Image 1 (cartoon, rainbow, N blue to C red):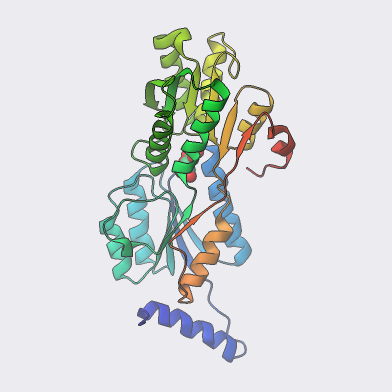
Image 2: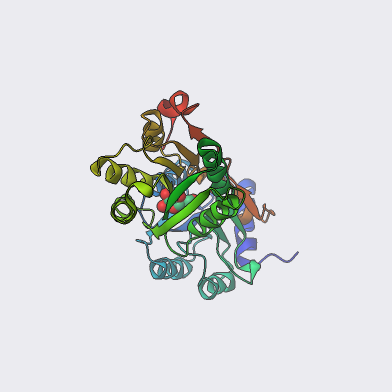
Length: 315
Ligand code: GZL
């Protein structure tokens, strides 16, 4: 296997640091293009990436995409110009990445996708994906709901960011699972963009439009679920009792809401994978082969287990 020049260069420096006393390895330089700061999950993910880089002495160039793909593309071009050793990308949406990832490939800079996946015909444009299995999360949420409701209910769905892998997969998985339960129907579905304010506003509109017909909320993330809790309370109804709420992320505030009976179930989507990302980057730069897809372990929290874990939750 012929390694690209930059990889050989990195290996040469690495060898030098072991063979020649006093020669110190230059820190790995990583460019990280984050989606934005739309939710508590995202804040925890950013914190994990920043604190772990600091702990390992990795020079992290951090770019906040502020919710826009063009900002992330601009950041990747800047990382290429700065000749970083590796690029980490949490792609806000699934499509439109090939041109800029081809530029990174031409520059010999490996790209690691974290958190969200992309759609591309050219699988060589990125080295690997590290994140959660969104389809499995949607399936777990639907199966839990079917058991909780005996397979009956009128559901309003709060979707995540349009075009994003988590929104697409969580919606598809939930709908697929519901085909086994004809008594469970999605009566309305709209994006709250993974934001608490978005969840509240969309839920207020749903309550005005459907009133007491709504018996279930399925939120693609906890921030929107917590916004919906607020809207339901302001409408004089009891979240978690009058309306069952099923969500995803398992942020600490949502698990506390499960303990308080305001949210009924949240499926974990662990954001604390900074260590796994940098382990993978280090192995890539050493010329090692890495797993193409590495899924984080996610579990489900409801009234049977939330109280036991809430105090120890790290995000
Ligand atoms: C999932 C992540 C989603 C979270 C949201 O891995 O992409 O984006 O579920 C976050 O909270 O905004």
